[in-house]
Figure (tube, one colour):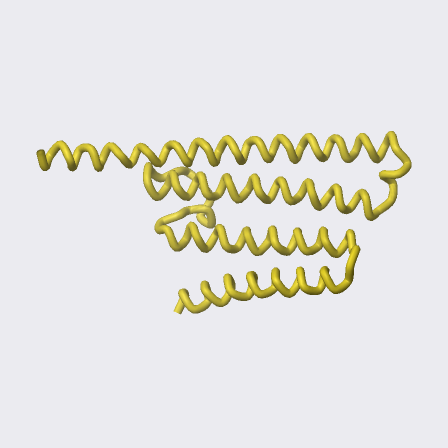
Length: 155
């Protein structure tokens, strides 16, 4: 009984394949979608004079970057879960994940980047100054908390 339970627990680590594969498919999807949006943006720029305005073009470009960043997050998380639960991969040193804290740290740093891109997109659109200010403050607080958490955790 004890041996079969141990075998079952060891076998259950294969469950990690489900999120790894799902995250990888998501990363692939957002990469392809970002590439599609980039082609669409270039096409609209060439064929429509309206898209030659820098605000529309920069907003579309930031949206494309947002999708590529999301793709990178999903990819990093897929690699991290694979390395933590399944086995090691031949990846650059900065992408090696040895524990869950490293994975969370990488995720937090990319979240900070996405928040910065999201705020930049909001600033480019600039509809209501007070709303933009509050949005920026909220994003700043979240970024500050994430940075502070990992600075404290380092020590």
